[in-house]
Image 1 (spheres, one colour):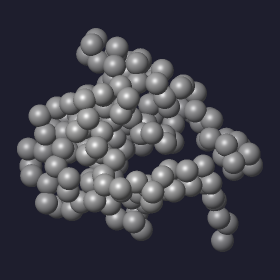
Image 2: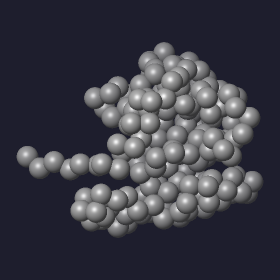
Image 3: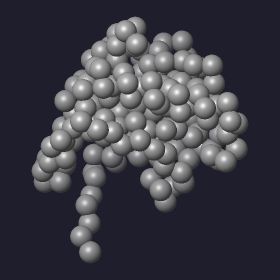
Image 4: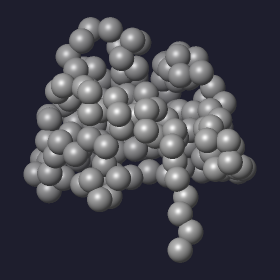
Length: 161
C-alpha cells in the first residue's frame, strides 16, 4: 500500500493542540473580522477563510452555536449553512474562477476533523493541475494567492452579489 503524506498540515495540527478554546468561536466573538478572516456573518452561521488552506479561497461555513454533533443542528441553521455554501460557491466562481470544488464536512477525528467540537462545512476551490509534485516531493503547498489578498478580493466580491 502506498502512503501519501501531507507534512504541511502539521503546522495546523500543532497549532490546534496549543490553542485553548475554540478558534471558530473566538473569531466571531472578536470584532476584527479582517484579522480573524471572518468573511460573512449571517443570522445563524458565518463564513471564515481557512487559516491553513488546501487551496486559495478555502472557506468554512460554520454555525454560531458551538456544536459537534451534526445530527443535533436545528433545521434552520442547516438551511442557512446550505444557503451560505451555495452563495460562497457563486462568489468563488466570480472572484477566483476555479474549475471545480470539494465541499463537505469532516465529522470525527477518523474522518479528518481537526476540530471535532464545532461543526463546519469546507468549500475548497479546485483548478485543473492544482495537485502537482510540490506537496509530495518538495513538502510545499503552493497557494496562488496571499491569504489577506484573497480575503479582500472575496469581501469586495460579496458587494457585487
